[in-house]
Image 1: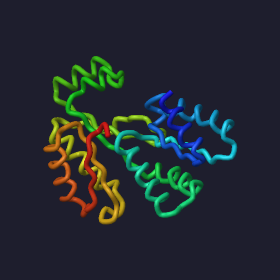
Image 2: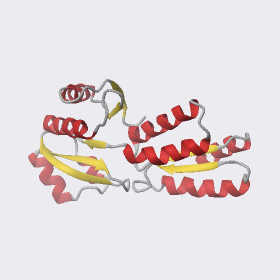
Image 3: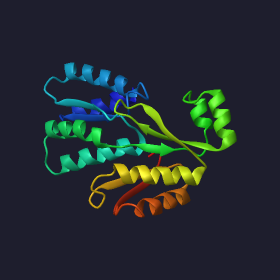
Length: 201
């Protein structure tokens, strides 16, 4: 109902609409909003309505929204911004690790046996959002510092043109870990533009 209300306000004001949603592989949210927008297309046939499955979430999704907004602010028409967002989403690399495995276990992403073993041995997973928007484990390391160092190594390997690109870091109230991660990244690549925020924003 909230989505429908927001979309209605935009379209009834005579504006076009581009919606960038949370990965459809992680939530029903995207498919639900896409369904609402299909209905809106019937109600507002003269409006241009587009939707993009970001295939990521949190600050990864936020990075895509910001990039699309910059294109729009530069004067690009909605069709071009939509095409840009569809292409740009394939270039976003979302990597993360967690200190506490309990939430992965509670969310059904980790079986009980694996949870107990990993917790006992202090094993930390390295996870990324794949090209289908699913969360996939790509590594396991011992301890928090090693997991952050591993993230830094992977970021350095994945980030193209670090001097001109932007690195987005979201965290769950652990700014000291963020500072450690940044120091490790800067040992490897000359990244200049870094945006830091909380994981839920």
